Length: 142
Image 1 (cartoon, one colour):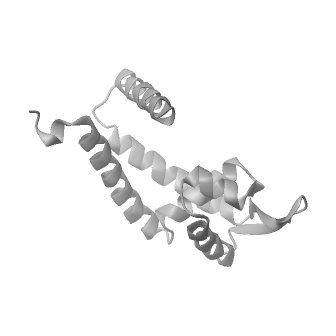
Image 2: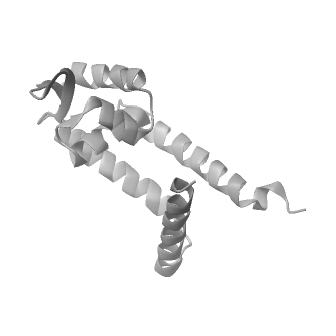
């Protein structure tokens, strides 16, 4: 039997856990959480997204997202607008104030990515990315 630490599932889980730990620490120094950074990045890519759709993309419960949006709205980084097609729904938009935060998020993620991939060649990084993308596709079909 293989050593647990050589098991692919263990490696993926442990690597993700460590990435989250490092990211949480870095974002905390900037006054935000990893969860808030994720919300800002997803909204920046999909301005005007419905709150329920955003929760699905982030794979979190709508109530959890609601609390994150409340905090980001209170900080002046996002705003909810009523959906003219559905009075029960809200559309989420970034404010102008969020642009500085998005720059910080990009800098932090680039720094973490480069440190995490240190020692890997460009080819190895590309192969790793392709392999993980294929695994995601495979798992999505299950």
